[in-house]
Image 1: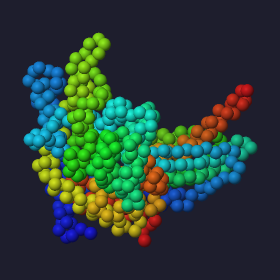
Image 2 (image 1 turned 180 degrees about the vertical axis):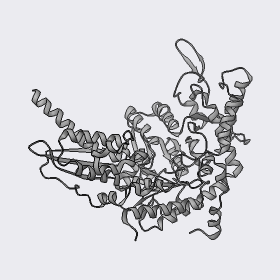
Image 3 (image 1 turned 120 degrees about the horizontal axis):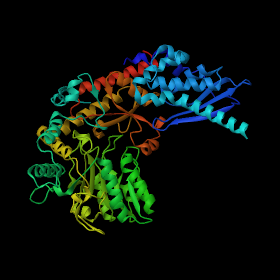
Image 4 (image 1 turned 60 degrees about the vertical axis):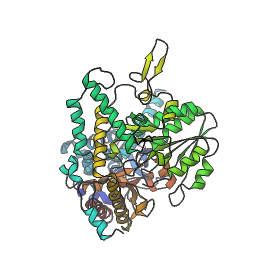
Length: 153
Length: 423
């Protein structure tokens, strides 16, 4: 695999100048994700609008370029989505980096995140790429489950 | 710096052709032998030869094939004993002091679970070092928790040395077992085992040595080390994966209870009791990897034929060239001693501000194999305080040459370029 198929200028721009890496004020929810074997640590926050869509997304933390770029790319993709759409995109991303979905048309909803599809050829790095997506999904699913409990009670 | 003669020695490579994987991948710079070494053709051939010509269950059968299989294992035991300097007054190798396990990890677990469990009492000390691989750390953590013993760490000074003062301070009358690695799998530094063993014995403690990173690279003589038990793996020296060794002094092995029980480790069994077979069979329950043992014997023959002394000298040159080459890069920090002669096999380093996993991935794309991460030594990396708790590690074996290290240096320049552009 050629270096630039993944570590290209666009990817490196997300690493060097992330737009979404900052401490959010008054987030609706925050969730932490870690990859103990890599030392990757990520804290992901979202603020939901009154209609339930993601109004703002941001992250803080440290880790390798792949985990950091992936978090920045994901944040950009998630603004304006409903939690259900976001969870669906997280699933699609997971299947892309594991090489289970390769069809370009099917991957189109991932927009810029498609640039990470070569991760599927780097099995040792899949968990780096997934960290942000896994963290967001866990957060939104936990929130949905809590809402359901509340309504059920 | 290497002299012109020394450089010319490591430019030549009379060994690479003996290794099928390296021959099939001429552009590959394999610098991860500390994780597992490549295997020469003679080892692969021996494994096949065993199954094709002498396959039978060793120890059990009364027919010729089984006897041959048994002989093959016994001969390898003798070769290993001779390799480790475990010989009697007449110079005859003491094969019965060699116990086969799956790997160094299993050997160390065996020691912790048998020796540890039988000698440790609440308040006793088990002394290990901060540079242990998890294999020589977690077994002791567990057994200390179980027995109420304390786990005490020898720490190194700013020159990455465990000093006699530190050993005197930590190995006291409460010490019952001292278990230390001879060579760090991260830093590549060699500890002064004879000094530590002397202190351990003065205090009445057993001395256990993790030889996983030393036996493949430096001539290890168990008498000179002064240890009671030594653990290592065949696969890190060119033997098969899945076979390891626990060498022990006969009186120590005799006194240790068995580890796994079952077939082939007993003399006699009744409905209510069992009598253990003598050492080493006492520790070898079930059918052993006879083909692996036989192939490991072929590996030791290969090392003998090439001359272990010459291989050791070559590896010292490669380690010096590797350390010097890394230290010369302005964006690389060597983690460990700056002196190349203090590195046995391995050199840890980081590329400033770049995560080791990114470094390893980009090097991989340039056909250079190194290890990146915590190297199964998380307490050491925490102690060193390295960023992300991770480092890169390049490690050499005698079948490497100068071009492998030059490929690493070129690859690191590309890593820097990817992150920072061309200067």
